[in-house]
Length: 232
Image (cartoon, rainbow, N blue to C red; front, side):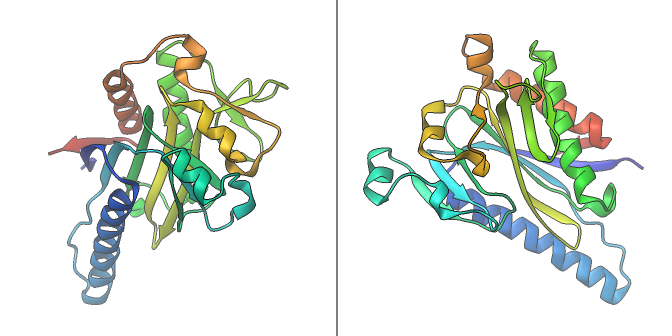
């Protein structure tokens, strides 16, 4: 029987509200796994994929350096942005309007117990999505995310990844620059990497993208790569 995933598009949503919702789903899945193991039950856990966009926000992962945020409190107010220290891996990143954010709350026991493979699968879904729109992309050795001309001096990052997992349940995920205002990346040292630029589909193609079209393709690519089907 094929693994199933519930899909929810949250639209534009406050970062804290989305984070709280992720935590709720994450905790529920872990609690079910613990209950199953304790009572030898076979109640299946659910896999949920959330898509959304956020108002301007900077988030700092557990291994991040606060000095990589180049704004003070008044600067954040001027930029109409918020700032959160959060419980994913990685350093600092930016989310905002025009960026497609994907949060898979997956029980990897349905797929494979390998967090590195999980990250590579997320990257591959974005790489294949970009290819559908005529953009060639790939990986950079030793770095997570998806890059354009990653092996050249003009390497630029188009998608950042940061995840948390516990008992093979995942949360957080992908920040994919579709129509993002890239000026906000100038307010941070993105992912702590000083010598590489950031880009978007809009910048690469020279036109605004239909976000619904990009969502549709990414949603399909994730299902193909992880080999699951969507249920209501």
